Image 1 (cartoon, rainbow, N blue to C red):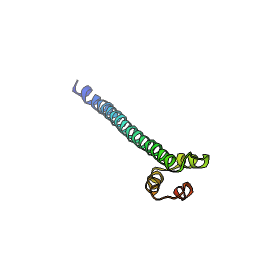
Image 2 (cartoon, one colour):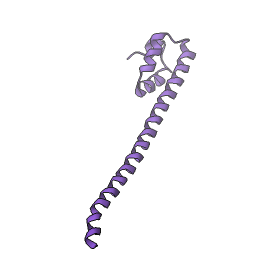
Image 3 (tube, rainbow, N blue to C red):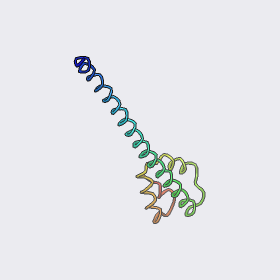
Image 4 (tube, rainbow, N blue to C red):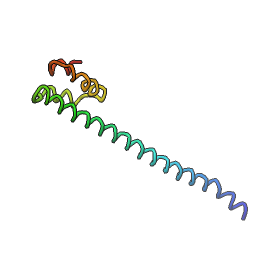
Length: 96
């Protein structure tokens, strides 16, 4: 009887280990998803705000500028958001 119980322990430990691993994996996945969602939302917000600022300062965006803004990284959007205060033209603002 004792031998049966001790023989079942490794199997039970493996089961518990798998369950803990699954829980940790789900938790990490949820956390990564939230972080990615915040980052994407932040970038979309920056893009929207910068597009509005550019439109107010320089008028309607030409297609090339809209494409450039949509492909921009968060760092580029932030740099352009600062540069809009002193840029004399749309071309000067969006130069690399």
